[in-house]
Each structure stands twice: as C-alpha cells, then as structure tokens.
Image (tube, rainbow, N blue to C red; front, side, top):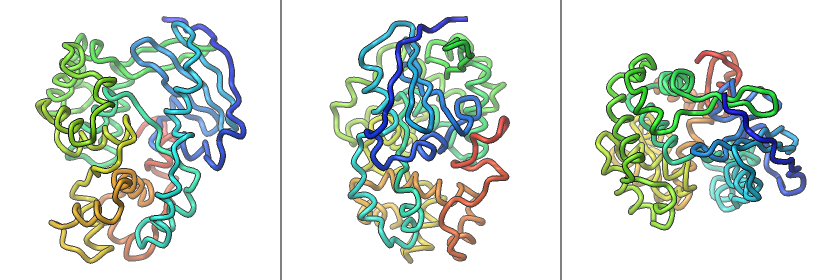
Length: 316
C-alpha cells in the first residue's frame, strides 16, 4: 500500500469567515471520508495528495510529494474563497429555496476532479439519489485505491486508467448500462481527448460541447460537472425531478421550467439546482411534491441516507 508523506499542517481560522465546515463536508459525502468531525479531502487524484480537515478548520496534508500549493488547493476544493453573497441575496424569500439558504448560509459546494464529476453525473442518469450514490460507493470500494496517510488507510476513487484495467468489475458495482459510458469517459482521459486544465479557460457552453462529445455523456452530466469541477453555475443541470418541482412551486409549465429557472437564478442557476436536492433530501418526486405543498423546504431526514446525512451510513 502506498504510504503518503506528511506534508505539514494549516489552521484555516479566520479565513473561514462564515463558512460552516460541517455543512461543507457533510453534503454528498461518504462515511469512509467523513465521520462528523473530520474528513479526508482529495487534493490530487493522479499523484495522490489528501488533506484531513476537521470541522474547526485544522488541516493536515499528505502526498506522494509535498507542495506549497496544498493550502490554496484545499481552499479551492472547499469553496472557502468563493463569494456567494449575491446568490444568498437573490434567494432571500424565494418560495422554494429561501428557507434553506437562510439556514445553510455557511454551506459551500465541494469541488471534485473533472473525471470524478463526470462519473457522479453518469451514475445519476435514470436513477434515484440513493441508487446513484450507491453506484458511486460501489465504484470506490471495488475499483478504488487505498493509500496510507498519518497511519490511517484512505480510500481514493479510481483513476481513469485504473477503471480501464478493471472495467469488467463495473458490472459488480451495479452500474448497468452506464458501464459503457464510464469506459468511454476513462478512454477520453487516458487517450488525451479530454483534460481538466485546458477546459477551464473556456466558457460554459464550450466546456459543455466538449463533454457531450463523449458517447453517453448528456447535457445533465456535463452541467453537473461544470458546477462540481469549475464552479460554473450558469448552465443548470435540470432533470425531470427538478422540472416538476419548479412547475409546482412557481406555476410554470414543465416544458418552460428550465428557461424559467435560468432566468430566475442567472449565474447561480446550477448551484441553486443542486441546493434543491439538499433542501428536499433528494426524496422521490411524489414525496418531494408533498413536501413542497406542506412547506418542508430544508433537510429533515437523518434516519435514511440523504445528501446531507449520507455520511452517517456505511451502506447506502
């Protein structure tokens, strides 16, 4: 097992401002990375580097080699320097997200590598929240790579080349037809057709065009990757679940829901779309519509896996 070097410590302290690290680390996180007090945060997947971050802002860094960029990379991944003031101002009093944004003002979306963001999106295709994240959990456990950091074992998501070597095991991860798309994405990275760094210089539409050129990657997956990797939120990932909720809350036709959402949230439309899944515990559509009608518009479920509580469960 690869042993990562200890690369120093850092206290985020006053740099956190109003950021609530529990909310940052808890949302869409697995039990093997977050335990309610501290979380493993991946800084580099290709040349493994991680940080162990506590909810009070204390971080320890580990890597194959040490870099002075680890602190800035951690801040980027956690979204600490991202100014969301206009997003929260825009959402104040909103009939769907107003209550959630008031309570979750300290929340920031964690970033992930483009490769992994695309896999997250693929696993959400035609799947419930729980089904999709169970697939991801299976992929990490079956194909991921364990390293040691600070005397502890850390499980990393598989890299594209590792997926190609063990592609046959994707079926064991219960990903179904999505296996083909995952392999296509892995090939695009390993063959140099797709790379995270060059794309960041492009605008959202141009990035989307590059991503959907991969067979099996659709608009929803590409737009989710825009948010998760590049913090570009102007093109929202809107699926049938969200369209129906938008129609119910704002009284618009479902076929006009995406256009309404983009106009309502502007540059924050993608982040707002992800926020809805957290606010409504990503429950199935029928239950989500019931919650909307009853005004239950912030996370309340802890006894089953939800975007905000999934870290509590060893098995989704």
